Image (cartoon, rainbow, N blue to C red; front, side, top):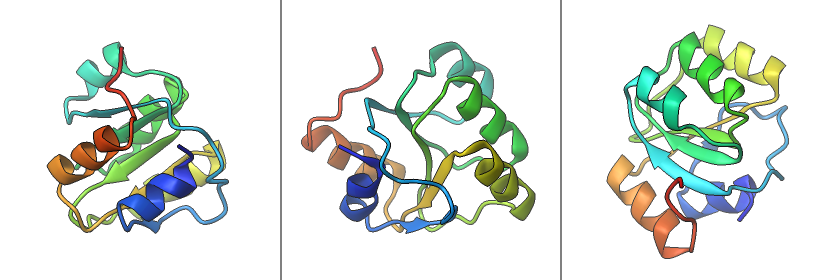
Length: 114
C-alpha cells in the first residue's frame, strides 16, 4: 500500500502537500515514547503518534519512515511541518483514533513492525 492509498483509507488530510505520497508503506506502528520509536522504527513504516514537535520529524527521518500519521485531527506545529517538507517526509492527519487507524492498516495487510 502506498501513502496515497493509506491517506484514502483513513480519510486523512495531507499536511505536507509538496511531499510525494507514492512511497510504499511496509509496516505500521503506534507509540508516543520517542526513545522507544527510535529503537523500533523501520524503513517504510507508517508511524501513528499524537506527538507534534520537531523531534518526531527527526526520529521518522532517522528511520527513513514512509509517513507520520496524527490521529483525531491533530494539527502539527508549523515548524515541524516545514522540517518534514524539507526532509521529504509525509505527515497525515486523520479524524480516526490511533486504534481505528492501526486496525484498518492491519485489515488491509499492513503488518506490525518486525
